[in-house]
Length: 124
Image (cartoon, rainbow, N blue to C red; front, side, top):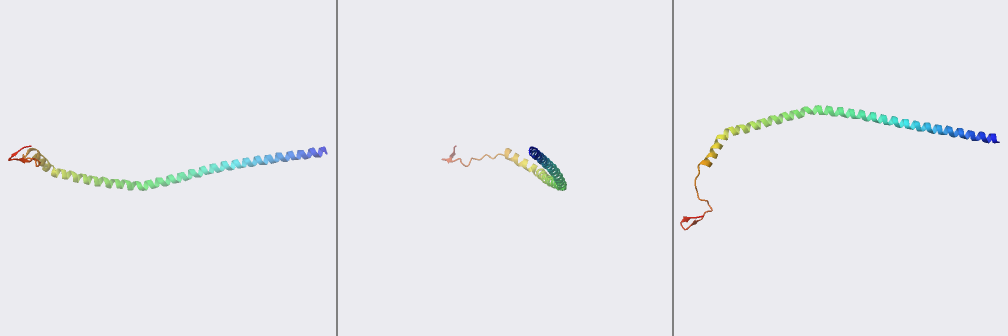
């Protein structure tokens, strides 16, 4: 009976070792699947990033011409306005200088409007 008892214990120990081995293999398999999933996710993220970068580059390239066209239109409009201002300056500069000199040099002495006349004489 001791031999059967010993053999039963031995069988249980072997079954326990086999179960531990199966659990260990399951853990290893789960860890490997987790690593594979992480690497797959990283690869998919990188592919998605590259696709979006390419999409952005093409969008940027297609709209870069629009920006340069807008800049050219603004530059043209600015040069037209600047030329109009320069023409107005050239046309009116002599008249403005003459008016300024007339105001400074041709003085007409007058009494101030707030000055009151007292008795026939003027005083301050």
